[in-house]
Length: 230
Image 1 (cartoon, rainbow, N blue to C red):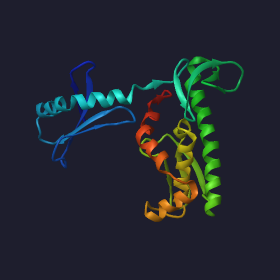
Image 2 (cartoon, rainbow, N blue to C red; image 1 turned 180 degrees about the vertical axis):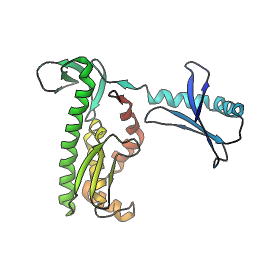
Image 3 (cartoon, rainbow, N blue to C red; image 1 turned 90 degrees about the horizontal axis):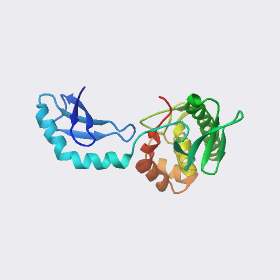
């Protein structure tokens, strides 16, 4: 994969991907990391790719602006916790403290991101385990284990042997969104598909799932903007 730059203010780095299967130019902006990728037929000249980019420049810049810049976690930065935005402050004592509009993280400032990430993962596990236990009990089907990851392509999964996996970043989202994802994955214990029967199980467990699902589609990508040093 090569890279070309779309001139302007600011210039935009575009990853260039040639594909033997591609029959036309296609442009993709990742909502997760802001990466721009242009896929093009293998033998197409780069000057044509740059011309295509210029045609799409207004669209691309508007979507990049809407996505916003990445946020490096540290004192003074702001991030959502359970859907409410908090300012990160240096705290005292031994424990992370959560207040109205703020979160205090004790210790050295260069350890703020790592310590806060660990605290968030613990909070996410508590919230997701509680929701998964509640929905599994209602469904009458136990799960076998629960793991957390920092997944980029999915918010959760359920394997055929009943193992649940979730993105810990769900704890940044509003509580009803985390709750919906737990119901969604637990429903797969009964229906390992996305059939009408599956969505009926989700609705029986959670209720009307459309609003939180729409939130994830429209806003979920922004949860990956928060960088903890990774």
